Image (cartoon, rainbow, N blue to C red; front, side, top):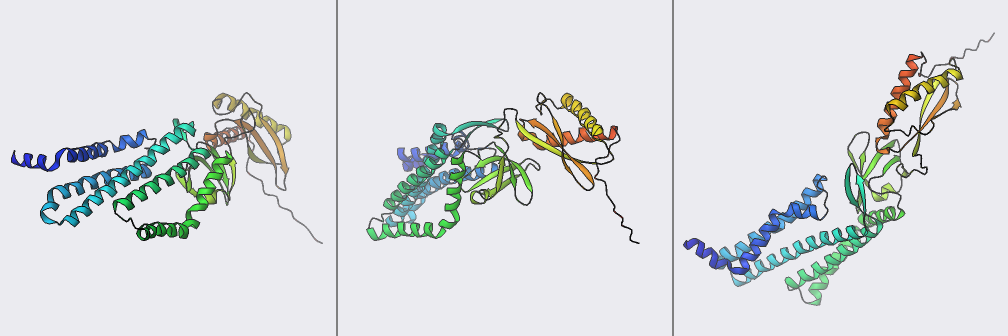
Length: 357
C-alpha cells in the first residue's frame, strides 16, 4: 500500500493523463493507422509506420517515468529541465506525425477517387491529393520545427536562424535526389494516364506487364502479372519508358489483342481458315467469361516470310488483369486444334541449294 501511495503521489492527475493517453495510443496504434487509410497489406511500410507511432509513445512514457521517479533523487534542476524538454519534443514529433496522417486522410477522402483493385475498394491518389498532401506536410513540418525551437529555447535569431539554415542547406544539397521524382509523380497523376489499379505494359529491353499498385511521392510500385512480385520504379525513370495503358482501351468492345502464328507454305489458306474457325468454337465454349465472344474474331495474313506465312489472330477482352492467362489458354486451344488437324505450328526451315556448273 505504501508503494502504491508513493506512485499515486508522484504521478498526480497530469501524470495519469500523460501515461494513460500514451498507453491508449500505444495499444490502438494499429487500429488508428487502418482508420486513417494506411494499407495493412503493404507489410513493410505499414510496420514501419506502426513502429514509429509506438516507439514515440514508449519513449514518452519512459522519459516521463524517469523524470518523476529517478531524476529528482539523482539529478540537478538543469537535467530535470532537459528531460521535460525531451518529453515536449517527443510529443511535438508525435502530434506532427499524427496530424500529417490525419490531413492526408481527409484530403484523400475529399479529392481522391475510389476504385476496386484486386477485389478490394481503395482510395487512390490524384494530382490534387498529392499536391495538397505535400503542402500539408510542409506546413505541419514548419509548425513542428518552430515548436521544437521554442521548446529547446533557441529563441535568439542566431540560434534559430542557424537551425533553419542548416535544414535549408541539407534540402538544397539533396534536391537533385528527391525533387525530380516528386515533380514526375505529380506530372504522371496530372496526366490521368497512370492510376492505381491500371494494367500497363512497359517496353524497355523486354516487355513487362504489371498492375499499378501504388503511386508514391518518390516512386511507383507495380505488381508484375507474370511473376506476382512487386517492382519499384522511380517516377523520373518511369516517365522515360514507353508505357501502354491497357486499362484505358479506346473501344467499347474492350482491348484488341492478337497472337502470332507461323504456318508453313505447305498448308493451304483454306486449311488455315478451318483451323482458326475450329479453335474459335472451342474458345467460345470455354472462355466466354474472359473474352468478348459476342464480337467477331479476326485472323489475317500479316507477312509472307521466307520460311512461313505469319498469321495474326485478333480478339477482344476487358479482363486486362488476366491478359497473360488468357493468352496462354488461347494458344493451348489453337495448338490442340492444330494437332488434331495435323498442322504444324513450328516454323519450317528452308534450304536453298545453288548448283554452279
